[in-house]
Amino acid sequence: MEKNAERRQGSIKIMKHLAITLLTLLISNVAWSHGGGLNKHGCHNETKTGGYHCHRSQSPSIQSIPQQKTYSSSEKSINTRWCDSRGGISEFRTRDGTYVDCLTDVYAIEAEFDYNWKEAIGQSLHYAESTNTKAAILFIKRQKTKKDYYSELERVINRYKLPIKVFVIEEN
Image 1 (cartoon, one colour):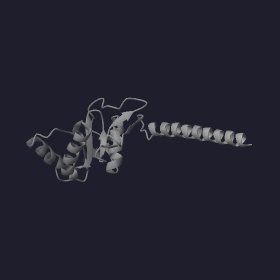
Image 2 (cartoon, rainbow, N blue to C red):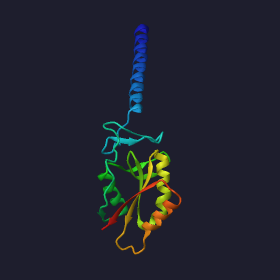
Image 3 (spheres, rainbow, N blue to C red):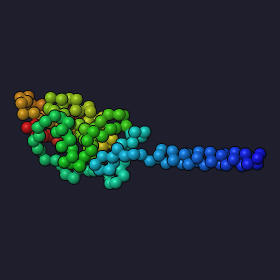
Image 4 (cartoon, rainbow, N blue to C red):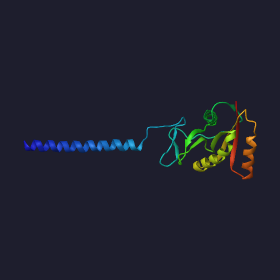
C-alpha cells in the first residue's frame, strides 16, 4: 500500500511539474506576441519604445505633394480624409504620448483651422522631433474667415526660417 501511495504522489508531482511547464510556455508565448490593434496598413505603435512597426506591409508614404482641395466638417474628419488620401496614418501616438494628426514617412502634420495657426507651429515642430520626420501644417482655410491668417503664418515661418511645410485646403 505504501508503494502505491508513493507512486501516486510521484505521479502527482510529475503532473504538477508538467502543468507548470505547459502553463509557463503558454504565458511566455502570449507575452511575446500581441493581439493586434493594427491599423489599415497592418502597423501599430509600440508603447514601451514609442516606435512604430508593421506586420503585414511597410509603413505608408506620401506619393506626391497634395493638391489643394475643399472639405467641410470637423477638423478631425477633414484631417482623416486628407491623411487617408495621402496614405498617412491618422492620430499616430508618439513616444511622448502626444498624437500626430497625420504621419507619413516624410511629414508629421498638424491639422488646424486657420485661426489656430500659432498653435500649429509648435505642435508640428514637436511632432516632427518626436517622429524623426519633417514638420508640416495642414492649414484649413474657413470660408467665413475675413482675416488673412495664412499670410500671418507664412510671415512667421519665413522670418524665423522655420522648417515647416504648409498644405492649404479650403473648408466648404
